[in-house]
Length: 282
Image 1 (spheres, rainbow, N blue to C red):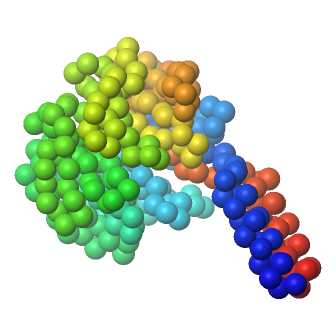
Image 2: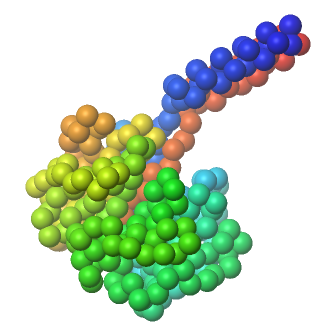
């Protein structure tokens, strides 16, 4: 009987792993606020009172980190929405987490990328990076850096060794689930795609000023198009087949995007029922 229960548990877990449902939330900085969108595009204000919010990133347990460029602060919002000052740098922009929970922050005031451990202790990861707009980690914990001064995407391995990955003037970076790198190309107004071997192609074109990029839990790509005037910013959505739609419009200077995967209630209920059934079998 115990063996049967174990087998059933494995089957249930495999099924859940392969069909786990999410209702993602998309977060976008706009002027002095962070706007929150559900997966259907319904919009609300998540937080306000910033001077110039830019970079956004979620850690593995659902805390949202936001940098305020003008104030030089990194603010943290726990899953209940409580707000804290996590750290400070001068003129922060991009944020990214590595696989063990360290937060990397662009410090354009000092030309560094700073590293905060989960307790908030700060160190300098690398210096002499000029002006950096975006950060992204691949699955091997290599850090990719969009250096707009040099017009390069620099790559740092986990030990901090640097090489130039691509010669492209990028304002946004994001990896998909199979390791393709997507890049907001400032010069051409395109989203370019690079496979793991470095071979590039144009994924989408016709943007005014593409900036932030982010993938949701089912492979949809969200693209921020900043616009040049208040109320002209757009968020575009590309499904996994590459079909394009307008996800949000009328935004004030959206520059970055972060996605929070949230399990749907039905999925949580299924997990609970599975646990109850297994308990009753014992």
